[in-house]
Length: 220
Length: 257
Ligand SMILES: Nc1ncnc2c1ncn2[C@@H]1O[C@H](COP(=O)(O)OP(=O)(O)OP(=O)(O)O)[C@@H](O)[C@H]1O
Ligand SMILES: [Mg+2]
Image (cartoon, rainbow over all chains, first blue to last red; front, side, top):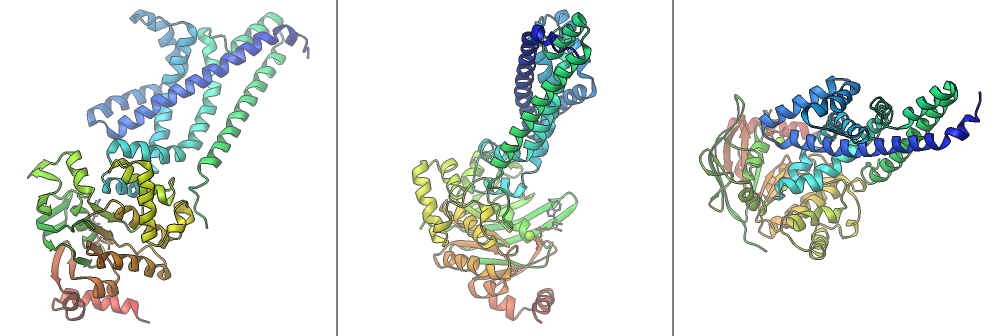
């Protein structure tokens, strides 16, 4: 082992890690937002709209992320969509995650007992108020563990962005390995960074869960 | 106290696919009176009750609240969502499973409809919610979440949630069936108070005692038909229809030891 190379490459590795976190965070937030919209559309839109959305879900879930990125980054310009690597990567992550997030929200909504929705209808609440006040808060609570779990999976999908030259952590690690032949050290750094990130996310997730379910757990 | 509503059902039919759950239901519910519905499981009691506030969409016939058709503007022409919501505002409903919103405190459960539907300010809604909770004997529980309340307390919060909207009609679907026996009394006593104040009430129940003592009329249902509607005494003590006799016999056998 030869750790002195880290002195030289430390800053670029840190920058790469920063980009990884940025891509992950924004990709997760946008992917969740799009997934939420999809889940609501699937629940409330007319039949023919849900078919179109369902087709989108099938296509995205049925193809590898790598292929989607290539199509977006190298195929995009053919139809006039010219994006830099970073925005292309973010858009790609958003699209890739959205159908999974949508499914998570859908099952979260299904976990809200019909009776609680009916009780709101019975006092004359509008559908939009029912969504905002009942369905979303309760659905999110049941969806939370799966949401955290999938965002953890997404951390590791960010490395694929290196293929379209997004300067995230794997990209920097590969550069360092190529220039110094310190493969083991470089990949240990990579593993350590990811482990720290995942550990942090899952801890925050558990905290959040404990906090928002405090009042929901039946006292026995 | 707002005026009490009347309900008229005429030739109401309801199908679940091929299965006919309600058959030509004719029922008059006079204002300010208590109507109890009894009958075996699966006979259509809940379905009938839920047609009154159009939680269940009937397929033909008419359901009128104070003369106004609910659910449809004309046969086969659904009423707008807005009009339906307006009509539902004055119809309270209490469910077997309480159906409180678990992420809100008792007071928030009661205030929610006042804020979202009646568009009352938060402060006023809180005040009215506290009054409604006091009325069902739960003034001290207003800050508790449903998960911290007993079944009987949860059901009383659900009743408070309905009466805070100042309904002119209250629908109860087996309000005590999910409760431990020792908690049934507290809920029935709140319902008795409401009846005494002149609220129109329709109550699906297996509590024959409540039906006998509080109801002004009792309806017996079987296999989607409203077999008979009459005074509690004639239905519960001197039934003529053999189907009612047999139902009551089964009931008494189960409840004697
Ligand atoms: N959503 C539904 N889809 C299909 N069939 C239904 C549905 N809801 C009720 N039914 C059927 O309609 C019939 C009447 O049901 P309903 O719930 O009104 O009975 P009930 O008299 O309230 O019974 P219980 O005392 O068990 O509550 C039953 O045979 C039931 O299986
Ligand atoms: Mg029922």
